[in-house]
Length: 258
Image (cartoon, rainbow, N blue to C red; front, side, top):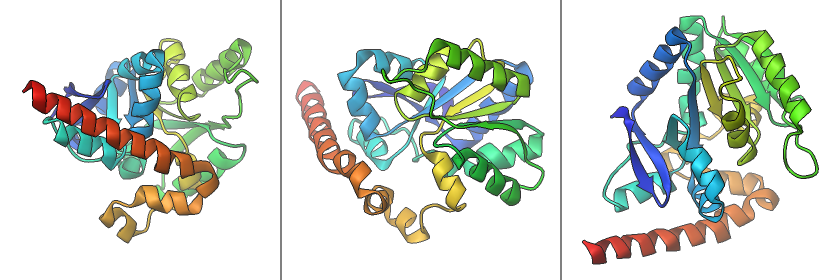
């Protein structure tokens, strides 16, 4: 899987890439000082992108769009072009932060509620001795219209550039984080930019967020639903059901058209 090939999963182009290729792309980006933007897609993002063509185009504009969730992996298999294994942020902690230690890369964490990125940074430095986290910034920056004010966005970009990281993790939630990266990828002087949703919340709690049995049985969605029912019930019931029906319709259509 060379990293340039993608699979169309109901409108989103998902990258066919394995971990060694991901690592190679990251190393090359830092050496060449050329931006490598990485985002992730799960069933919720697929459904959101179907409702919002502009968001679909933004996600498809990332250099890599990794399969975050078994729903996307399953869809790619049913549609006849497997993307490979699930590759969510939680699966790539060692790749992002262990590799940063080995290569001497500087890291910046931007996003989530006030204090969360700081706690995540503290844990990461304990788990990965020698990790250089050059800055953190909370992600409560959107105005009443759900957008980041232009002046606020400019100050954040300046703050990040002054810290001179090699890797920037952006955890603002979808679609805000994708829009932030798309609008600023050429202003941000950072080789590797990764969207990460609520990932800092996981890192602020413990290294292995999901118990081993949850990972083995592929029940991460259920584990999160039990922990955060009020926030996630719609995503993992109504929206997931709609996603599965849509996937079935796609599969039937593909079968009929050969």
